[in-house]
Every structure is written in structure tokens, then in C-alpha cells.
Image (cartoon, rainbow, N blue to C red; front, side):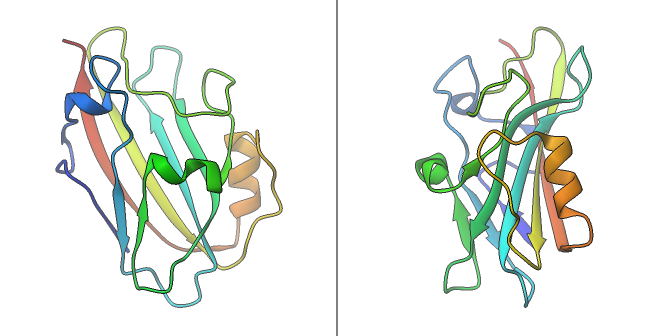
Length: 147
């Protein structure tokens, strides 16, 4: 499984995806999804946040399309189940580090079954429910420093 996006792994995020510009979420094309996958889960977090890992977005039960790939974009967020981010909101928050360069890790998981979960879930609950159901995972990292 792999993630294709418009920024290279471990390279700077385009500013349009940050609080300094457009606040857009990058489109992520997920390819080579393994056979038997029922749903996908997306976790985007910042491991360099001053208070520890900060969750930016949690999406659960992303359904597959008929093709071998899937595109995740902010246009479809309302169709999927959103979890609680690091600001205790059920929403996405753009990268906006207070100081220094931060890594933003986009992690996708292919699961063998749909999760029994509702909007507002925590990352801890999500990981607990994913246990034993992960068929594959992939990640891409974007880095960002405020201008």
C-alpha cells in the first residue's frame, strides 16, 4: 500500500496546506490497497508538538471505491467518521507550529473489517478498535516551519 500526494516524503508541505496560507488538506491517493480490505483509517499527527504528539485529523471507516485506489480529500470529510483532534474538536486543523520545524505524519491503515465507532472518538479508542484488524499501512511525512 502506498500514499501518493503532491509533496515528497520528508520534504516541506506546500504553504497552501498550512495556517500561513490556504488551510487546505492535501489530496492523498491511496494505491495498492490489499485484497480483503473493508475500510481505511487515516491518522495525521504532529510528533514534534511541544506538549507531545498532537492529532490533527482522525478519519475512520473510509469506504473503498470499486477501483484499486482511493482519493482522500477534505471535500469528502463529511462523508466519513471524524474523530477528536488535539484541540478537542471534531475537525481538521492545519499545520501551524508555534516554533521550529515540525513533521506531519499522514498514516493510512487498511482494515479487515469496519469499526463500531461514532463521531468524536479519540485516537486511543481508534487504536484499540483497530487492534488485530490491520492488513497493511503506509505513511508519508510533510515538514513545516512557520514563515
